[in-house]
Image (cartoon, rainbow, N blue to C red; front, top):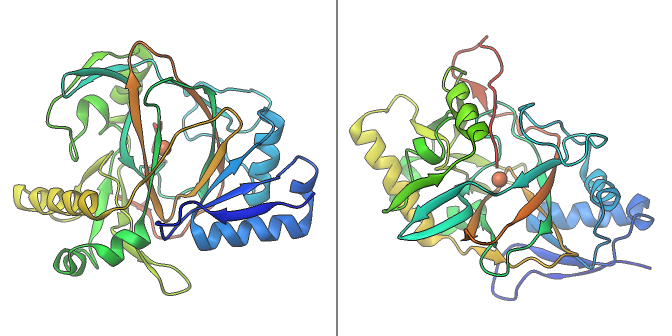
Amino acid sequence: MSITVRPLSDDLPFGARIAGVTRENSRDAEVRAQINAVFEDRGMIIFEEMEPSNAMQVALSEVFGELEDHAISDVPMADEDVRGMTDFDYVDVFEIDGEEVSGWVPWHIDACYAPKLNRGGILRPILISPEGGRTGFADGIQVYRDMDPALRDRFENLNIVYHSHLMFTALKFGRPASFKPVRMRQMMADMIEAAKSTPRTVHPAIWQRANGEKVMHVSPWQAAGIEGMETPEGDALFEALIEDIKAKMLPYWHTWSPTDMAIWDNWRFMHAASGNPAKYHRRMQRTTIKGDYGLGRLEIEGSAEPIGITV
Ligand SMILES: [Fe+2]
């Protein structure tokens, strides 16, 4: 059985849907090459009608490369036998614009707090919320093309500083107008506290792919500010960039089915989780594909590797 490939949506310049991938054909060299070509071109893929098992998630992940361990050992693992199969059990509750939600994660790049940027994640739903619980994907190539040219020029050679503790309670940029933690696991509070003493990282705001395409690639989540401009003026400029990115992005919001899996290019996309009413339970599992685009670094060379937190 061969696979079928179609666009994610007729009105979006990115993304694809692929059906027909099995544990057997995922080992076939031609199928692998076809899937990887779609990934490189379209940047994210929703795999439909997948066998909903750890074995299938791993087989699909291996199409794209070697799996990576999660950057922090305290993050709960879904399967101790699978490298980096992370269990995301969204039980922390926040009040956003008057609603109690869990599973909310603002626009971000995974592991921007690390100098090496992983290639991407493969996400699979374990428990789906009957309301909300969608995952959003925004293409940095589309954002670069459509954003305010003056802001784009301003950030062409600027770098962004990231620090893993700047999340939830300590979120500095892109904070909702009305936001407060209601219930947060002690484990999460402890991880945020421990991350304060770890080194910061630096990544470019814009980078260029080998094919010449430029990517606007910024994570408000975990951002400390613009390198060398961590002043009120610099912070206002960065906040203006984030507002323009949000205004110009054409996000795709995925509503999950139990047999879906998704991959996104972490060197190109920002992603987010919409959150769901706190009365519902949502769980996801993720594997991470090893890799690096080679443009990130520790703020202070020779520091210990950062301890990361991701969601
Ligand atoms: Fe993420």
